[in-house]
Length: 190
Image 1: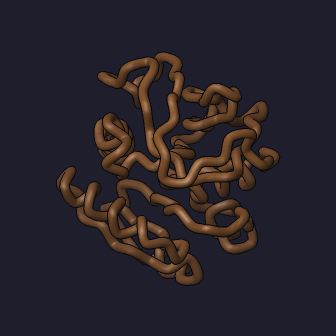
Image 2 (image 1 turned 180 degrees about the vertical axis):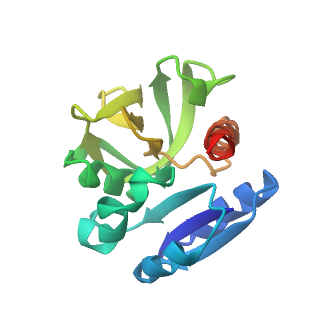
Image 3 (image 1 turned 90 degrees about the vertical axis):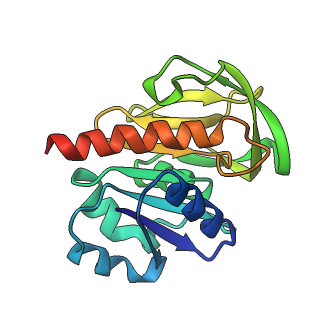
């Protein structure tokens, strides 16, 4: 099961529908109900969904203090930035803010990007970006070298700055499928 954290963003339901299309059960929780997650068994991963504000780590203390060491985490857009903040990355204004527009994304070889071209267009809805640090590995970037897809170097944590669920992100569902398979395989090994 996927736990999808809703940061009061309408795209949360689009992301949920993609996960359901990929044959996963999804439960959506508002971000202030995080403690309820601790009672749920058989979680494949937690997805921190998009939102419209600056990433505030205080809203996600339970993740930053405990959960990430035990459950895989995916962050999309604001969720990506929250992951960055949890791991002490700095957040900056993007040199090329885009809202509902496609942008060329350049990727490095990584299992999350299996069957995805190294250069591809994805839909962005962001005016902020995170600067990776010693804990975070950048595996996709835009023309300004801003992190568009990251992984944690130690834990099963992935952040996506663009919107993979968007119809304008041609390989977005494939990336989400790769991530779901990766996280599910980790859960099966436990």
